[in-house]
Amino acid sequence: MNRRLIRAIADEGLLPRLFPRRAGGSRDGEVSAVDLCLVREGLARESTLAENAVAIQTLGAYPIVLAGSDEVAARYAGPAARGEAVAAFALTEPSAGTDAGALSLRAEPDGKGYRLSGTKVFISNAPDADTYTMFARTTVGAGTKGITAFVVNGDAKGLHGTPLQLLSAHPIGRLELDGVFVSADRVLGEVDHGFRLAMRTLDLFRPSVGASVIGMAQAALGAAIAHAASRQAFGRPIKEFQAVSHQLAEMATRLEAARALVYSAAEAYDRHDPGIARHSAMAKLFATETAQQVIDTAIQVHGAVALERGHLLEHLYREVRAPRIYEGTSEIQREIIARDLFR
Image (cartoon, rainbow, N blue to C red; front, side, top):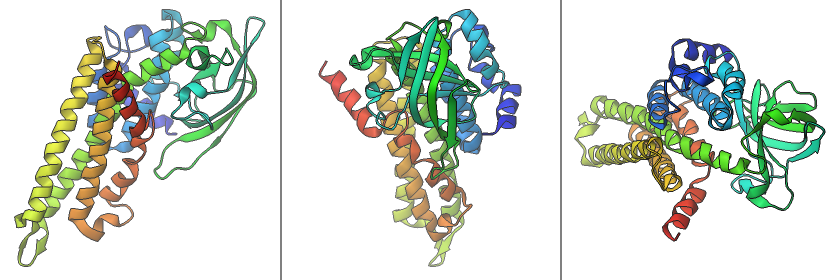
C-alpha cells in the first residue's frame, strides 16, 4: 500500500474532487459517478497503480459518505479524501463472495455497542488500512436483511490481518476479528440495513470499474496500432494485412461501445434514474469482458514480445483479469440483469 502515492493524488486535487465538502472534498454536491469514471479511466491509461489507489480509497470511504451523518462523514471520510488516511471496503468472506448475503461475521450487542468476530478475505488495502467499512451480521437467519455496516478503526483491539499475493500487484489481505468492539455511533445507516448500503455502493462503483478497464484497453489499443504501423513482415508493415487491420477496427469499435455504455450508466446514476442496478451491471459486464478481449488481441498483434516480463501488455494482461471477478463476477452481473428483465 503506497501512502505517499495516495497523499500525492490527494494533493493534486483528484481525490478531493471525488468527495463532497461535508466529507473533506471539494465538490459542492454529492458524489458523482461520471467524475469517478473520468478519473479512473484517465489514470488507468497511464498508471494502473495510481488508478488502483484511487479506486480502493474511494470504495472504502463512500459508504461512510452515503450513509453517515455530516459529523461521521467529516470524521472518517474526510481524512481519506485528503489522503491523510487509508480506507477499505470489507464485505467478502471465505464463504461469502458472490453470495454476499451469506456473510457470517458476527456483530453481537455489548453494552453501548457491538462485538465483531469472524473473518474477512480479499479485502483491498488490508491489513494496513486506517479505516474499514465493515459489514457484519446482526440478525442470524435473516439473509440480506440481517446485515449492518460499521466503521472500524484499523488499529482496533482484536483486529489482526495478513497480506495476500495475487496475480497482479494489489494491496489486499485477510482480516481476523476477535471480539472487536465498535460503539453504536459507528453504525452506518440503520441496523440490519447494511446490505442495501453495500449494493448502493456497488451500483455506484460498477460503471467506474468499466471505466478503469476501458482506460487499460485504450492503452493496449494504442500500443497495438503503433506496433502494427512499425512492425515489418513480408516486406511491408503488418497494418497492411487485413487480418491485422480488421482486428484493430473491431477492437476500437467494441471499446467505443463499452465506453458509451459505461458513461450512460454513470449519468443514469447521477440522475437517480430507476433501474440503476441493471444499468450498472450491464456497464461492468460489457466493459470488463470487452477489455479482456481487446488486451488479448493486442498481445496477439504484438506476438511473443508482448509476453516478456515488464512489457506494457504483459502488465495489462495481468491487471485486466481481476475486474471480471471483484465487485461482482460477470456471472452475477448477468443474473442481476436477468432478474430485472423479469421483474
